[in-house]
Length: 585
Image (cartoon, rainbow, N blue to C red; front, side, top):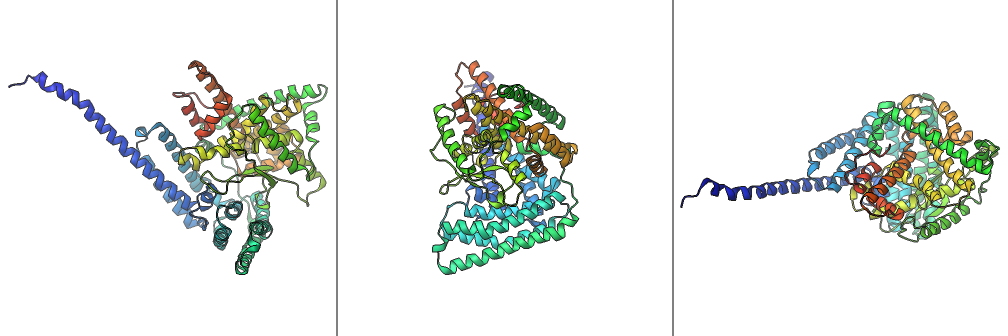
């Protein structure tokens, strides 16, 4: 039987699309396998390369180690990261699932961010506190939480302490472009770390059972700990006597590095000019809002005078922590009563004074990592006054903890800010998103909650509560100003402090502390940036649901947003499919 040409081609035309589909499936499977292998390998390398960070994340395979920060070690790290970036770029991201494509972007920017720091910013040659923080963080990360028997953790502490000389030798080798301010700050940090080792660390381990350990273990710890403290004291002396007299480096990044750091760190691609325009607009808007609320309190006085009156009432140093503890309980109840966000547990963080080695801000939240399964306690740190301060300095410091201010700080650090964010991080499915985090997400969320909670009724309409929230909001825009003006536009510390005081209604001493922080943290605009992005996303998501005929729920939005675990610009793609609008408009 002879077939016609048409009858011969019909079966082939029918089968050909399926052959193509088979090829496509094979390519997709290959890309997925390649990507999965990359994630496994890169994260294993990352944990080994950054053992202190691994401990903080709850990965305990490298508790015995500190990173190699020598010049050769930095060169190896740079080469490895360039190799990992090349392997990632070899994967066809278009063949990955939508979730993996988002994680691909996270990995790409995380690697590029590290390379930017190592190759161009090079703060490992400029910032002595980088080395001190590696040591203090490496030790405190093992001591703060009972994730393993004391004997095991003490052994890891001693092994890390034995590596302190190598870290400090690397610092002496690498530091050659140090700004004078950073050298002075590092002297205090080194001595604070020595005090932490001799006092806080010993007390912490004794409370955990060291006094009941065999005498030989107690002696071994005492010898190792004293040697480590001596190393830190010697390093402080080197900083003061050798480094400080020749510390003439410049901390500024310049506009190009500032923009690229923001792009890779926060997934925000805006120019310095755009960032300045947005911030000045928001400063003006918040100042007008402050004037309106201040007039509710006293229409005959200047807003700055009203603000000063509010900040003049604060807890004593002895009352500071008990007041914060009560605020935590009140906020936890408010969240449940007003359906703000689902609280996964009834737990509350422990409120404590900020340890010596961690003093550098007014308050902070110390939480276990998302991979931690045993030691899951969290600490709300409050930086109290120091005995050696003058009475004027103590008073100026405590103005930051005025009663409305301390309530807002507790919202930010605890409920529903950082602590609630921490409760959700283990629920994130992606390992990549558990490992990497962004200031505009973590700090942006915590700062967003300050305004959101007052919007939802916290304070029962008390204008002092709203004014306290607005003061903290404009403070974040003052940070935006300081970081941008100093690093991208050349302002010095004194100039930035003058304007910071004016913008944020701050006294001179705390304003200077804030600006000096900005020399080391140029993109700490991420507080206000994140708040603005989340507010914009919330309203765009509400509009999207209405178009779909669905009802918006604030609790649902918060629950979903926290479980996504992505920077806001990428979270938009999950919550609003197909959305191409910018995250900040």
